[in-house]
Structure formats: C-alpha cells, structure tokens
Length: 132
Image 1 (cartoon, one colour):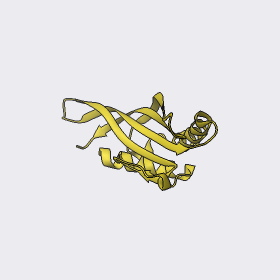
Image 2: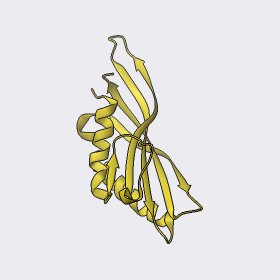
Image 3: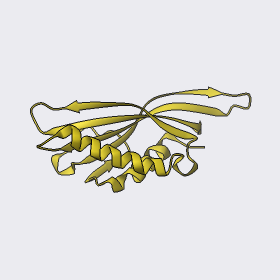
C-alpha cells in the first residue's frame, strides 16, 4: 500500500540522476533560473474503487514535468531529457513495490515564446493500493 507522497518521492528520486539542478516531489509556484533544468512530480487526478473488504484500488494520473532552458532547439533538448527520465522509470516500473504499474499516456509541450525556457509534461497512469 502506498500514499501519494511516497509515490511522488519515489518517482522524483528515480528520475533525479537524469541530470537536474533541482527536483521537486510537488509543483512549486515558481522555479528560478538557477534551478534549471528542473523536474517536478505531482498528481493530477485519480479515482479509487473499493472492493468488498474496503481495499481501495486507485488509478491516478501523475505528471512528471521537465523544465529547462535551451537557446537552440528547445524541443530536442526536452525530448532528450524526457528520454533519460523514461529510461530510469522503466528500470523500476513498480517503484519498488509502491504501485502495481505505470504507463505514459500523454505528453504536452509548453514553450515560452519570449524566452528560451520550455516545459514538457509527461502524464503517467498508475495503479496502486490506496492507503489514504
């Protein structure tokens, strides 16, 4: 059984070696330039179903957001960092037993046209026994 906090922290710790200046197991209100490249891990939503013995099985969407600065091709830079993160997560798809499994189900780019900063949100669907 796992809590959302444990899951966020496990994903953050697994992805950290991909080369970030700062990593967060939540979505901070602001990221400073000296913290780039940065990684944020947070839940978007989830739904829990209970079986006959009150065991909660949750399916949730977790966002792994990569934010960096690149004066050249920001999309390629984000893709390279995302590939490194995804390779690390594939090595521990059950987060050492915290979850049943995780699959990337979506991605979205956000580019700031006035700067060379960009973001890539990777959405993962996970299943786990809910302790909350």
